[in-house]
Image (cartoon, rainbow, N blue to C red):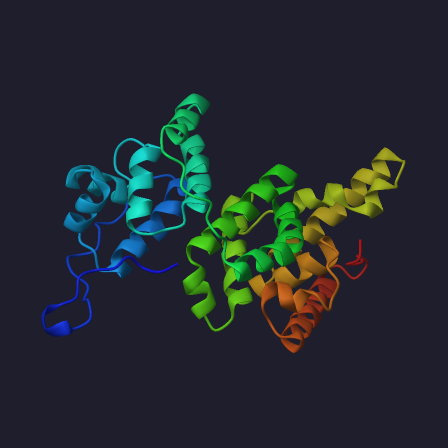
Length: 297
């Protein structure tokens, strides 16, 4: 994804950043709204275009564009959003999906969303970066398993993973320029999952509901015994959520999601040695608290 061209400076000097960055996003903007708005704002700043330039390219007034870029007022329709996205040479498909999700969050009805998209001329089919497509295919299953462990819903897990890969597409240049693309992507996924996960007092994720999905309690016929087992497992999973983030990730992937040990490093973007150490420390901490609980359950 190449930034839109800006005029060269006198004397053939390279284009420079002109104007000032947009004002901060309004506090009233919803979480889903910010997800697509922040990359658009970043793209505008990186492009060197001013708001006046964007007016000329999009056909909308400075006031309306300023409101859109700040997330101010009513949730923007797809037509003006599309005009800005095209003006900045941003991939339309991922933004459209994120825009729809945010429209639902803003309580826009289905007809408003559908008609807004239908009334805009559809762009030519975009080519998803080959490396991004391959990465998506490789990571979809482990990412979804991780999200499901926290969200306890296939639909919600798939939604947050799809959102993650759309954001990654929008910021693919940044991701591939980072020292470790898989690590960059994993931290993005973790942030999106934990933003939606139920929280305990103090803000840590609440994993206790995962106790109802374990194989060990599912086979217990006696109700009282089964409930007692669930209670123990719920406290155990609560302890997992108290681990340092990287230890928690490795533990959830290995023992709640069943990801093979040799596959975990590639998922979280860490070396095998580091991942092994994280697993060792996590199991040591958990065994000290719950010596009778098997992590494989």
